Length: 586
Image (tube, rainbow, N blue to C red; front, top):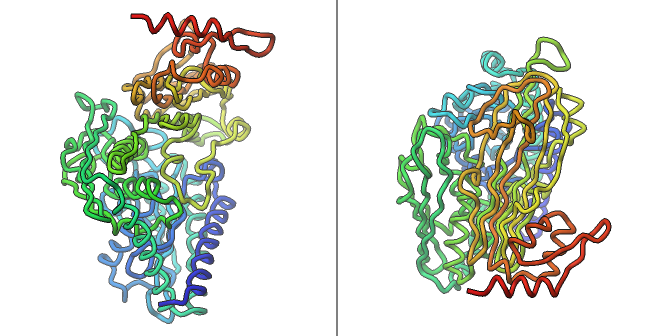
């Protein structure tokens, strides 16, 4: 056992190290996606593969799975100083999708393995059938990008050149991809050096003791809170939008059973896996269960693998939440918000609380420009469209214009800003594109006593030919549902040349853009909670003033009369009372 002061000092040093690794990567990365949107994470494992330290919970269980897999492929005595391993196979190490590449490095002290440092970073393109790699029409994993089993990238400090050559030959913009990968390696090696120095200062046994204590703390703080919940069993179900290559919606079913301070999450009745990229690796499922559980108990509990000791996950191989190779999984990050819906509502029933309305989800877009700043080179403009709305609750409105996956599931992250947008100025400087609009979509949030979060719109104009790849998300076919009388949010949509005779509502995942074409990307809004006619008229007026609701939407959806007054709006309370009274008449 480490003394409490030493344990706290070591914990804080590891947190500082994770932040340092993040900023080294941001400052040395090549792509706009990595420099600006920062879709990455960092982790530190013990020599046993346990994860007491992490920088973003959404990748928590991937590091431990990869570390344990590494030790089955290379015994500890065959792992050396200077070794660097990479991999991105979702079925081997649990990565969300192939553009997320993991770099993992062992930490040795006095010849003995004391832990691992790692990083995961999304590449703007990693090969596959379409620009941006993640392909909504995929029927197999191989169509989603280059698949790398866990392998050595550096052997005792020397580059394995053949691996780099394979990557260069299979991606659309190899200089950016390999530049980002080099930045990842540099940040990871920084972590290795810092952890080795801590081992030299405090001793390897002390580091291991602190890791064990941190895991125990999370478990011990969590179990008593679960044991006080009144419910014993609860069930919930969520329906995913009908995916490509499948003849209907996909159902995820959950039954949660509480045994004192322990929970069993049973997903075995979920639908079989499909030939579409909505299948989800088990690491993602475990992450959602643990994150939602921490949020329903005490968000200050350290979010590490100790949380998982308080739960049992029951799954069935060959289902959508436990797919077998070569099932495609590219839209895992887009399914996670629906997983959160089903887990939160089951836990709310156990805890005796009311359910939460469904959230929208944002999707992503990739423009494969055929020309750019340097002649003869392809440019991939990959963007995470952080613009959907979360569902309303029984006490507050949903959050507007966010990435519901990042907003909900990176809780506990050391970088609380989540995944920022790439600034418009950066996009227009680096790619042949103009951003004509960037705004909220009025009336997109589901009406209710508490309004669903509003979505947003980005309108692009192409200045050169491009191959467009759109990754649709949940809430684009089946709108995010409201709860207890709340109405659904508005479905998402992608429109080519909106408002012109050539307007096309894009229902597929790819399109060829010509110079002058416009693309309107509108994310779904969140569902509402409760009867809209019970929303305070002053709150509706504020929504109109702030652009969340139109005057027409206030009249139709809320029974509230709002009139223009110069550059603002005023509430007509007598007319509102008459309108609401008339609407209540049978």
